[in-house]
Length: 95
Length: 445
Image (tube, rainbow over all chains, first blue to last red; front, side):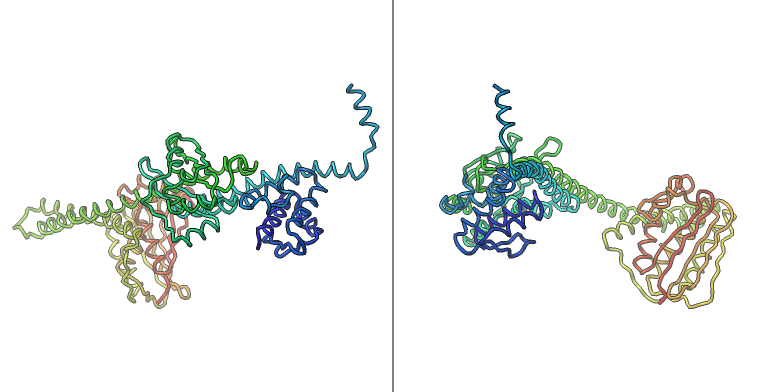
């Protein structure tokens, strides 16, 4: 499982704590993201640039719940982002 | 100005979608607040659960460090115990990649290493210490070789050392090393770190107290064992001397002296019994109480016990009787221990706690079990005393007024012996002054 897969899984896990099962419903609408194991918050990013899939996931939540949900995504993955080079970080998690 | 602005705002049409999104955002923010509190509570709940279940400081520290490392993805979480002089590492949990580094480099944790500069700073200042230098955390939890590798790979960017207090004294330190600096920590992490340190301090305090108590108890038991052995030896010699005097081994003795020797011999034997009870209880707790199990006739043992105690019952003008139902009464067990600690103990107890009336012993066969019942018309047992009946040193509230020589070990030992033979003990009483009924069941051979 790649770091970006882990990042997407962690974002969904954190959103689930706030909005419940709706987090999975919204994640399911993101193209390029497929669920591996909901109980372990494992997802796989495929079909295209995984960074863009993460950006779409963040945007999906922000479109419905605003800026606060964007901050939740960033906070959730702060520990994982610290180990990535700036060029490897999805742009939505930098701003 | 304000009026003109509000007029402008009022005139701006707000779409249904925008209103819905605004409402969604408000609900989300409320949900977020709750989620943060829930996360902190959930973490504290996990730590409290560890605190409740752990009685060993190493095991407690292992579980706590693992929970915190996994929750926050910290690189290293370690707990040290501090006794005012030296540091002892209790546990360290590391991230997967730090663990892989340790394995790849063949790094082992050496207890001989000294505490790191950051840990020392937290202990001396009695306050949280923070550093962004890896070299400040090199020491007993993070070996110097590992520090070197971590420095190269830039895995650890900052570390916190929190002192763990007990009565204002530092009794340990928790070290947290992470791949971010303090400013990068999110709100939840900051709030949780402030909360869990106190829970860990309380947990450590509890297990340390438990271990100290266990150590003191073991020492006390050893001392008790030693003293009992010594006293038993002296009492044995005294008993032999009084018996020899009474039997005229040292020449003819006057009747008065003979009587006194007999009384002293009886008293010394009681003393030996008391010391034996204490010794047996200590052996039971240490697990060194051995049983020599062979097949014996329970009916014969019960009859002889009752016969032996007829004198004691007659002195108090009590009617001591025994009844048997037809049947086979063979039991496989330690006859001596069952006679002394069970049969004699229950009958003797009833005699002691019955000022007037009777003590009735009934032995019967109930399927595969042999039932031994001692029923008396004695002082009875209050509801408050009932739970203490078979506990170690478990006197009834007023029992010492009736029997000043009670050690409180008799029924405790009886229960242990019966349980070791696969049997059960029980007691019933309608209350103070209403007599008691003790029941023992043992499996038939």
